[in-house]
Image 1 (tube, helix red, strand yellow):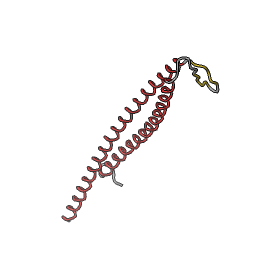
Image 2 (cartoon, one colour):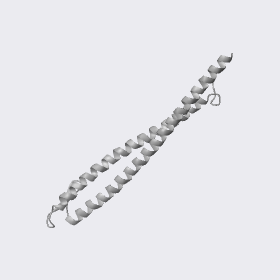
Image 3 (cartoon, helix red, strand yellow):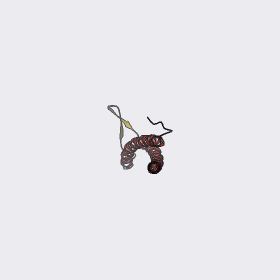
Image 4 (cartoon, helix red, strand yellow):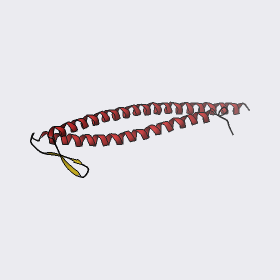
Amino acid sequence: MATPASNPGGAMAAEIDKEVAKFREIEQQMQKVQKDLQLVIGQQTENEMVQIELNHLNAGDNVYKMVGPVLLKNSLEDAKETVQKRLEFIQAERTRLETKGKDLESKGNAISEKVQQMQTNLQQATAAAVNEVARQAGKV
């Protein structure tokens, strides 16, 4: 059996496999970030709709909030403040997820380029080895 020293192609292929595994891990992380981002966008849309509805109400109108299975009376200003704080939190989370997604995409692109370069190097090394074998066979 050939050792990595006597088979540089095998060592190069093993390195490529390591990088491909890293790339797949990043892809999985990106999928999770996208799923989380979709959830956050849905929450943001829902809360924006609630905010619009609250803005249509007059100061004397009744507002209720659900606490478990019970509806409790709530002041309009308190409800508006709660929704605004929720929207600020959701926007911060959305920004965090978008930034994380861009970072993962950059890492994935870098690994992809590295793998492509490694594959090119492996192909060139293989071609050189084949040429060397052919040259040596011609001398015999």
